[in-house]
Image (cartoon, rainbow, N blue to C red; front, side, top):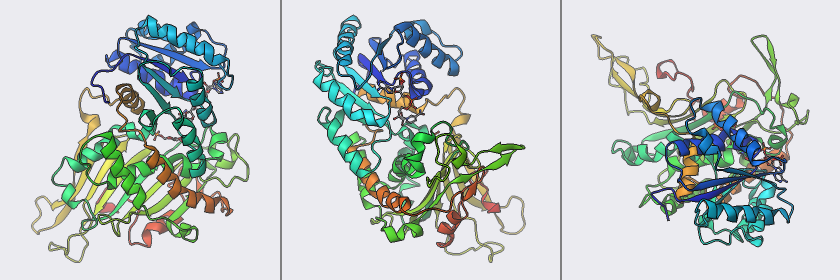
Length: 500
Ligand SMILES: NC(=O)C1=CN([C@@H]2O[C@H](COP(=O)(O)OP(=O)(O)OC[C@H]3O[C@@H](n4cnc5c(N)ncnc54)[C@H](OP(=O)(O)O)[C@@H]3O)[C@@H](O)[C@H]2O)C=CC1
Ligand SMILES: O=C1O[C@H](COP(=O)(O)O)[C@@H](O)[C@H](O)[C@H]1O
């Protein structure tokens, strides 16, 4: 049940000394606290192996908050709710101590037995922790018990099924919150509203009026210190299996009959189930992979992927993926959804471009010239907003000449609006029991099923890497994907249809 008020709760963070907790979880919890969105009755237990004390954790939390928020009011009160338990998650005995501390805090803060277990750790520990929580009695309370799981949820369909079976022995599907932080982004959440709350879009949102949809999520950074993880993942598993396919599902789904988690997820599941399955021999026709090579920026050497720490110097791992997805249902028959994502590209940006079909003929001056197509651009990040590209009369001209114009809405221009960080929203949803913006097992399974065919083919074929220089928009072959259909990637910077 979704609660309107945040209920009292004990939040247990496994991996409390790690990067995610420091950069995302503590600042997000603090934001909720400051906005009064965290119940007065809350306590946090941080768990990790390091021999820290409550005081050390509290200072660490304070530092992490002060890094992003300079005027952190009531920070001392906030950190006083944090407790630390040194604990190796594979060590059976340490759960007894953890249970004792949890029960003490339950009484001290009147937490009503409500517990959130946040697994901010490497995925190989997820199953073990979930099992111990049950066998060692941490879920033996009267309140709710919710398990929040970070990505990656498995490495392929097979491992995801195994993991799911393990955690489902302890938690029901309704109590499992699989994080996809893109679902916490303001403009990703806005996709549904743009589509279903505007009479001008929904009638056009189909194969009769849309020629293609493009989703780009580009990053400027390389793999940084995450080479070890990334070598086993690559861009396909790291970004496409989850974030990119989730955006496709939101763009393509049918209107849900109600805005409940069950109905929304069920519509997304139908889209993922309708993705045209790619046969091994077709992978090259639908997908392009890339890996960044070295380059020079302002006279400085920018390392190629194979030079990064913990990366095999002959690595076959993809740091870039572009693909053409077809959704074989009535609404989308024949409309390609192009996706691309990669590290060390020209800029950090996530944008969705919906390109509408051309009008039947150009009635206006220069009628031999093609009119610019109408585009709806959804800016996910760093700007947040939408732009509608239209054609209008060239101002002051004698002839009926057209010129492209833009209608712009930018969230960033609303004074005083400070869009909450994705993790803040997702933590708040979890506290209230709203699983809408978390991925259901059926979505995870269908996404892996789709991606596995591609990864299996790629793992067995040695690629000619590197094939794009750091600081560029990826390999040339990605342009061919669209060219063969008569399209091209719309630029993501200062999109100006006139110059394309
Ligand atoms: N960092 C990020 O931006 C993102 C991370 N994620 C996911 O979040 C999860 C955590 O990532 P991240 O924080 O970067 O990882 P880190 O390596 O920074 O942190 C891992 C944490 O696990 C603890 N740990 C490791 N082994 C044990 C053990 N046996 N018993 C108890 N604690 C242990 C470590 O603490 P100690 O050494 O003290 O034991 C540390 O607190 C991963 O699944 C990752 O894929 C997802 C999206 C983004
Ligand atoms: O999940 C991940 O996402 C980030 C990109 O997230 P964003 O919010 O900054 O767009 C990516 O860098 C990372 O490799 C991946 O694991």
